[in-house]
Image 1: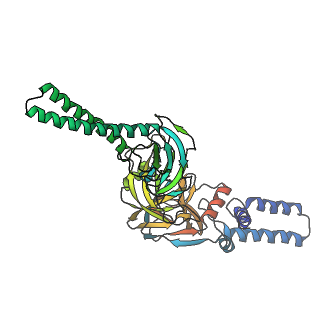
Image 2: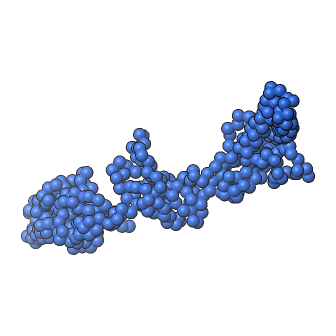
Image 3: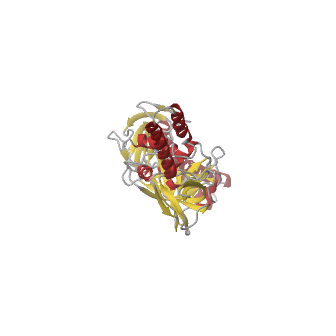
Length: 425
């Protein structure tokens, strides 16, 4: 209904703009010529209608080239209001578009570091797990070989140590040659090196070389020193966000495929994109408020990283914000707007954003002039959610149209009027 009223009003207003009454007057004169031989009363009636048009033109038309006027009823229908330009301070906030992503510092890919086949799976996608919780169990022949080698080297080390000590005593009594003594010493050293090598491999797999009891054992021989069961456990508290493993699956020696991906979603990243001209105002440690739209809470965080280089394709730099996912509703992939508070600006002339209209690529405001309203070009500076800073074109105390500017612009554009004709600077 509002659109219909506005369109009707614009059409009506066009008739009131200078040059739009010409056709109406021509019609009256033609009518007068057609009835030149009629009665005198009819002739007088035509002159009365002509006088009425003169009165309307006097009420609504502005001087040529100076904009246009509106009747009080027209001003009421479009809600036209004016105000005097005043100074104030902008809420200097930088708004950047971005996307929520996983926090890679709290994310882990779990895969077996030994060949083997899957004998047990304990976790599925979406399941919450604790650090150290067993996700799956493999039967690994390689692991059995490592434990066998460790035990063999351990026993050999004990035997070689005994032989070495005997050799030392015999050497002191000069009943053993130097060569035999060095041979016993070397054998003991070789067994030590072998044991330590296998022990290092087992510890790198986070396994106890002495093979203490672990949770994956499903048999009664929990004290066995040779075990082929290899456990994959979660390295952190989080949620299983991906699983690529099936019972009986065989993992080769050179496997590089993750079996599980675990992510802690209590804190996520918001990756914002900043243009070149915005980068000087951004730094690590700044407070950021993330707005995800209807249905979401307001999330706060701090800038933790500003990329040292711009992306060649988008010509923007990535700005990373760490957000606390306190209600669990933040999801990777969601779009968000990050507001970075830069503090208050200095005092300057401020007017509402809706009072500034773009006409032919220029920022314009409407001002009362010669009994009507004329467009005036202005130069805008910084802006916040509600206001523009006016750098030039409108001074403090000058009157301007604060409501109804869009309707005035529509009338001007529809009438084909020159927005630069007669406007003040």
